[in-house]
Image 1 (cartoon, one colour):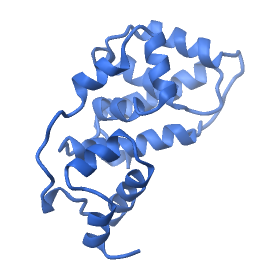
Image 2: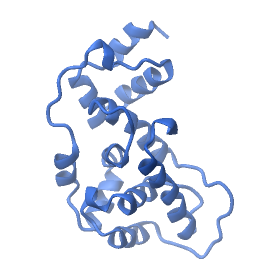
Image 3: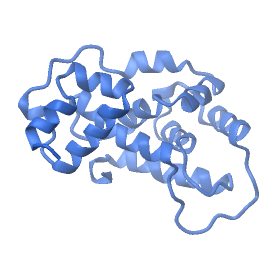
Length: 183
């Protein structure tokens, strides 16, 4: 999946790991990912990274614990990373950048609360960044790869804003199943 990430999006993930490590957290969560986005592209959120970091520390705490080695992603962080692909497809983007990652993260109530605590209105961020009206998907906009198709089926089953965007563009579970055959 990370092969679709732009260098900036990869940097968001690297900085998320750095944030988790510095805060003494043993896993990378959605809060760390949104901090990574805020550090790479603060204009997307319209929040000072330091204020957002303070909100994360307030919500999750911090410790002096030394965290070594690879830090795993939490299920919420994994979900946001997967949803970023759905966002990219809904926006007709070929790659996943900080914008797509942020839009996926903002589907999570906890991230919305952190963004609010950091001084921004998640609704305004979504309204500014989300695609308002895109044409329906053509055959060429459906995923070409079975792994992408399976991922999009999972996103469609979960629901949420990304699933709604995909559905509006003619990309739903049935369409994907039809293209790749029953599984």
